[in-house]
Image 1 (cartoon, rainbow, N blue to C red):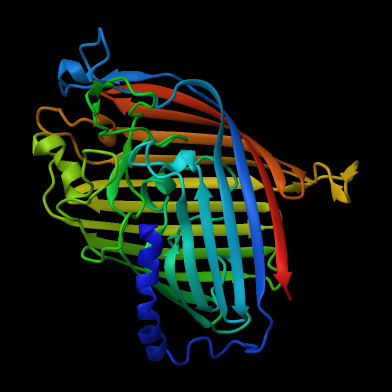
Image 2: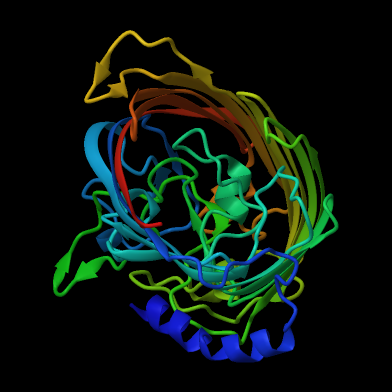
Length: 459
């Protein structure tokens, strides 16, 4: 609820911004009297997950009471190894079209098992998106008929994020850099039909870490619950990498500024399109970002390690990402690529990911209630790579040495349309990483049943 209150506080900025942009969307043929339209959707996801068990000892010593009985070392290990059936999410979504130039969305995730972080005890109900847009925002690789501008305010995704996702898993770039939404304002403009620009001013997602597979993992949880020690939690640490965690509070004292400049080309029907975007973000890291359910703090406090005793070799408080995106669509074929270079307080990381997907319509052989059974299939393959260019503290005691491992991830999957609004995705993730000069591996199988119902109201 703190996120929602933060979004409402931001509403005070709307009047100032709109008065400063009196010509916003004036090139659109707006119909001021158009009827409002509302689209309500409810979606649920259930999974079969099989996560391969791996565990690696770490050098940092924990007191005996913080370790399972008979164990004298701490480990990085698979969050929740073995085979499991689970419901990961129930989503409520309301899309609003108040006028032709005023749109909005409220998206609430219930349960949200796969996004809980810093720990699995994080909130189950999450206001994932709450935003309003005035003007016209053009989708990637779509060529608008005329100029247009927009203003967006609230909690919304990063503009460089791949939103037309074909797999339930995420690549390393998406996990590390634009996995979750931020709170603030975004301005965008079509500079003619083929060029565009975007600017974001947001609170900035706090720096934390999580496992790159389905479950985030529990890191920094208290070893006591009242007077009872529980050193062997159900959810383990995982093999975490640094990433931008969820925004818990509205605090612009370490705000992030982002900008992007792009070119796009395509045909009028939209069956072919290509989009190239160059983008950049920067902000100052806080000495400590407050996080729930963990004794770790975010930002610089995380880089310092527990109690500041195992610091990574940071040299500043600057955080920046520079990247490039490529979207390509040709009929049922799509390609998405992203390159990123990050400076994290003097610790540099770079990487890339590329995804190829196809969607094939299937012939009609059966129907239920007028809806085709098995209308389409969509195979997809994604490769991503993350290379940190920094080492651990001199003694190698940082509690998550996985943050410096060179990492490769291959995701292969097939999404099958069952009937309209429902589909089944079968995918396999293969991780390879270099630990202490040795290549290690970990696999995860994820089968996802997605069921969605959508209803529209208005005209």
